[in-house]
Image (cartoon, rainbow, N blue to C red; front, top):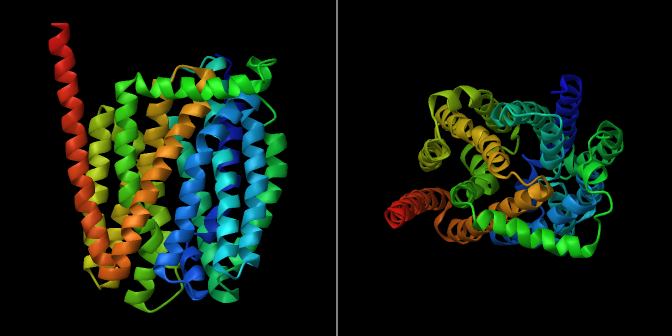
Length: 408
């Protein structure tokens, strides 16, 4: 195993994750900016749903593009386009202006989705890495979330002091700068350059999409992973989109720096505990079941209190398992997928499904929150998600038993 090259690859991957955290500057102000621009919850959700739909249709084509034409190219182009979209968000002042910015950012997100992970994993596998990926992705997630913690806090303060749209301008400029820096940082190990030279036709592009889908269909545990993560995404999207509105209504302030700090700190600690968690809780199904139950319970409790301290405490606990979700997902996907030529494509299928689930949760939560309030919405979707999880696991175990009987 080539230790020096492995170390260089891991450092480059960590740096790329840190420098791509600029988008977090908008976390605490996104919904509030749209709300203070005169949009209601239905219009805000329509804008975000546009993002979900755009990503849903773009994820797999852009993932196949990354596998065929270069993971590094896909990631860098995504950063540059994201910068343009964020600046357009700053300049927009109407519903349709925000829709346009959202579509551009969605395209950028799809270009980046899975490409950096594929770049790193393929490079590590080529260098002889055989240690699993939970620790690797867990550490990366911690560094990324620390950067997000800083960016989100700064963005919340900029929004509070200078205007809710200003974090978008700063984030857009940082995206452009990051793309220039990372073009040189990720100069080693582009999969397409090293192992797929000469295989760059659009026929390969379409074949890649079909074969990536077959990998998922033919792998039952990978399909189950997709199903569980679908439920998690649907369940947490109402929290993602409505927590700042709930916070402003409960505590009469648009300064979201404290809850942003608490949320991101929770995900950092959760990701830091992932390696320990995996030694105590074995197996994908058990790990993700524990995570989703804690997430569901806290979503049910958060809107039930008007006490600031309890609100913050439960919000913090809620973020601990959420900090484990993405590293767990990335670890298991890359453990299951042995085809290095389809890795970004499979990751993009995951992103497409995650987005579809988030869009489902968004539509339900937007309608219910408008008519029956945020508390009812969160608690109802939490209960629905628990029922769906139980049904999904029951179907999986039933299929496993049926397969065993057929073999016997």
